[in-house]
Image (cartoon, rainbow, N blue to C red; front, top):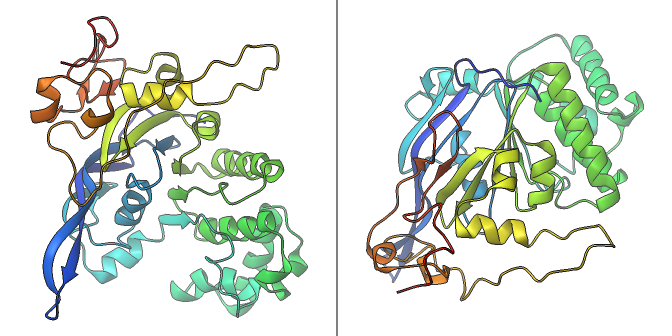
Length: 339
């Protein structure tokens, strides 16, 4: 996982996605879901940026907004200097050759009526690349690259196991030699024994093809294994961002601390210690709390947290790359509890 310190491949700035809620006979807008509420992040060339958080925090929505599968409410998605939210259909189609996605469910994401060969040939057909014979050779090469036999092209998705179907999904994602792949929980639907194989495949392809990944997951142990940097989301906002090693060794936000503490330790000789329990439930994104969204569950919340939204700011030296959205970062647990 080599990181190019040069110009960023992708910059997401103040991204917001608010889904309307409609009700009544006339289907008037009666509210909105704040699925993504001001997310900013950067993915460098050759880097894996992990995006983690509980289910429903908006991780997948961020990935779909980047690819314009959803039209964001506000913000900028700058890919190689071009704002993808401002381009028309022809330019967007050209950009999508460089932007692909691996979906969470390897069965639902594949057309059950098409053979694997048809599925993998479709990107070449859409972008008018090659002759039928050339496409067939490309499909065979893709299958071999992801560890499947070329004769798999004549079979249908239901004839494969879950891990094999995800390999097909990966083959489709890399068909056009993209620069950025959004991995939306690509191993969460797989058996634990298969997860490591898929992760190793993704890392090998990254090294071979120079790919950048936005790796979306809720399993922090998995994200630690594959990521160069990690951003932690809570209720539509990023609350902490740092290099993977720094985040796991020195988490600053109380939400990040709770997530890391909940990771099970496989060492049987270590005494199991119960992680700190967060109080209350995750608030509704329809009516998120004012101020810091995490304050209703935070053991360190104070009056300022309930009224003032903390900005995502650099912590410590500016060259560490550790950013946190907390009014009391670095002092948590030292000055008593809530007031």
